[in-house]
Length: 270
Image (cartoon, rainbow, N blue to C red; front, top):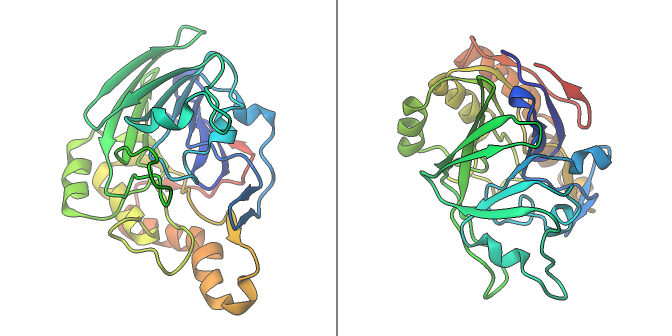
């Protein structure tokens, strides 16, 4: 069964299994430190959610200003320890009208939406540094991923994770999913498969998992300011071509998966 989704850019997306609105790693501003958005600005509908899932505490996934604009009534699952980033104070505001819960790998959370949809979330482990760096004394929590199930539909969102034998074992133990949102890129040549999946590793993960459809995320959205003219070949590889390379890799490694590139801000049913 096809699961509707809207990709907002980077790792941010709204998926709608069983009619629930589940918002993933919302970063909805145009600027993030030295990075600038190269895709359309998400509209106000991006802030409307029944459930919000945060995979780790890095600011390109756990973006407090975006979280503070969430619609009231959302349940927000954060890596346990990340609650400290949402305390009251001059720089950190609590989320008005939202329920924040800390979770760890192995947890199973059940949520009923305002419309009565039952949503079940299984929390997965991820191979990634989950700390909020470089700030000293900031919160720390595990890097995690999720399987979301509602209305008989299943979605896999791994967050940021690398390729490892542990990932292989974990994927082989999961049931197949209707929709997968694997990360396929990042900021540049400092990335490595130990901490991030690339296009080929993402396709291999889909083959192990068994995914009916896949839409890649974590690529092509935020670009470092002023650096593109210095290394155009690097920029093409890490910011422009991951999507096409992912489609080719899926054809080779996971031919039974229907892979689709989403346009940011455009709802689709892959």
